[in-house]
Image 1 (spheres, rainbow, N blue to C red):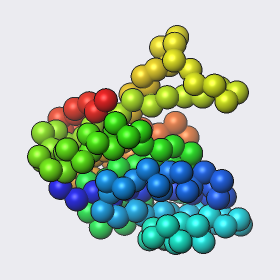
Image 2: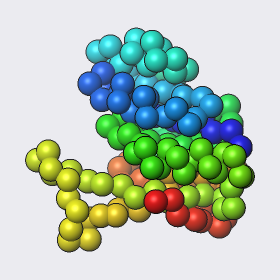
Image 3: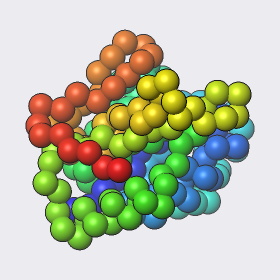
Length: 158
């Protein structure tokens, strides 16, 4: 199992290093940038990411474009302001070693408000499909509030 990590960006120089550093379990890191005017592209390249510059298509459209450009069928999509926990990275290493049992996997996402993690009121875990076989899943949604839809079997990572 080989995995391409995809990150869509625009002016993410502050967030991008943390995101990329958390993706050691991925075989490729692909950054699709939509016109950054800061050092986002330079930072991505310095960290060894492959960078494609592309016009903005909306969130779902941009993330589907990134998935289509990935070198591997398994895609791990994260936002530039997100990072994998060490536990999640370990689970992905195990999947790579043992092979996937599902076509897509949800991951628990933690939200912040005013710099504090929201761990109550149904906000955690905010489960989202982020690791998927692109042959069986696509990003759907309007211009914002995108999500992955898979017509295959969906498992959960912790």
